[in-house]
Length: 141
Image (cartoon, rainbow, N blue to C red; front, side, top):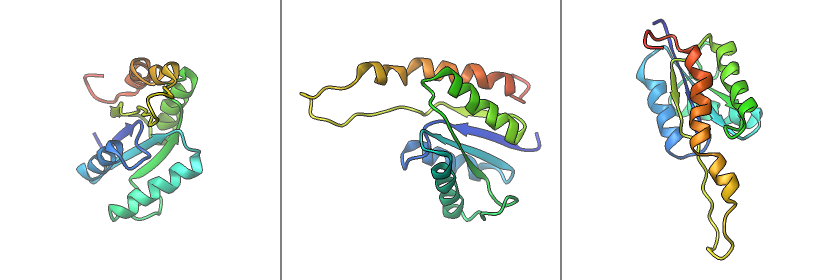
């Protein structure tokens, strides 16, 4: 395998996903890692450039290892578009890390939107995997 392309969902913040991105980006010298979030493309690109800088990679196209892609993993079309964009930009996908999630911080009396919360859980994991699996360049597919 000449390069490794990874997509980490839910990785645009400063949480666990960002740590996973940094680990994958430094794992091999030919690593390409795509961060994902709900932000607009410009904001994701800013975050990707910030991570590149933190890791000591340049911002030029030949020096970058971390890029961004936007999409809502709760929505099938958006999830398919996210995976298709990775394929179109990088020629395939080798690693998918399903890290997207959500949290709600509010007084217990206020409650949470259970429909929105549930939509980001099990279906989102199978949805991203279903679209990513055909792109796998590994022998196990």
